Length: 511
Image 1 (cartoon, one colour):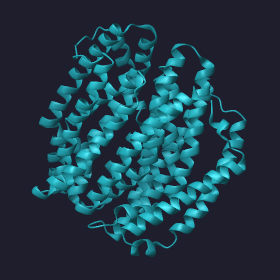
Image 2 (cartoon, one colour; image 1 turned 180 degrees about the vertical axis):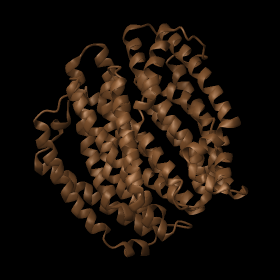
Image 3 (cartoon, rainbow, N blue to C red; image 1 turned 180 degrees about the horizontal axis):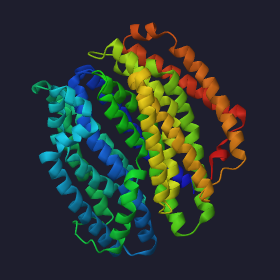
Image 4 (cartoon, rainbow, N blue to C red; image 1 turned 30 degrees about the horizontal axis):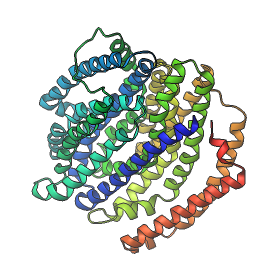
């Protein structure tokens, strides 16, 4: 079973890795062509709002409510019944999302900008640009929600590769638009808004043949009375909040950041992108693969298999997540210089982005763990517990935002997100233990000590590699990439060697 999970996770990780590499290329091009200006701040807010809705609704609430119910259908129903259920759910979702997007395009954009970036009201130019670009990006919410729906069906039937590739389509569209469309626009960064819209359509077109192959491609039909639809919608309402606490925390930070100097939102964005690399490649891949599996084990009452799969996910998460956190913490400046310090991206931008990147590194492991831990509840169709924990986490995050924004500015907002996520992790573990979903055993203490030893050695290597910032700036692009690659490989190999010396073997990450 662990081999099957590992193969599926590797497939998703490989496609996500491709997407993240393309994403870094996209960000490098954007940093070079657009810099960190008021116009870029405006686009990032216009892009962040549909992205927030995607995480809140599509990839959050929809998938985590739909997949457990669909997994039961997969176990107990015929293909014809599954096809009818998915058709009805697609119809009901479309009936909700299409009017919402139309309303957002017609009248909701200024309201959304006022809600998510109220500080833009102090600068009319930035506010109007954000509204203008949000009109273009708003339909992305519908297209991406439909993409997430199609991906959920494919994941439940064991196809993880095709859905994982869809995020690469967005990056490809944004790269092409930045290079070929932006020179012809009065506001060059507006090209990215058009790319987002086109990518949403292409993602649906890309996944359609895979559903057709499963004989599950059908026209949406409205049927609110369908029992499966009722169950999904009932689970979805509370999970809209509980599934995306990390995104809510980051968006709360954006609201505060809109009051900070020009460039703050861009600095936070580039830091988030660096943190999202391991988060997407590992944590999201693990969560994507393990949720259908846990849901099937719960539906078949295979409690031992459920526990083993959950423990396997946590071990894999920690093995990669701790190293990712250490790497981002100690190598932040060399990574930012290598990827972004070209063209309009200045030394000040490097310094400011580095501060918030280190702050996100503090909580990276917590962000990664939480992606997995909430699935322990969602697989059992328990939505209320993560929601209650989420409310506590958001309150903590807002309090920390208020406390830390004054001494640390934008970096304080990143640190607030990190610290609140660690609170979220602690409460999730406590409730998993209390409700009997998963209980930490004594062998975990030894495992954590082994991880600490290996990460301490990697941290020493990365500290030495990053100490001479002036040298990293002086190198040209090729030298930067070569040295960054060599130091990352050296730190990773040292980490793996220390794990082996500490006694960790392949058998220790098997279920």
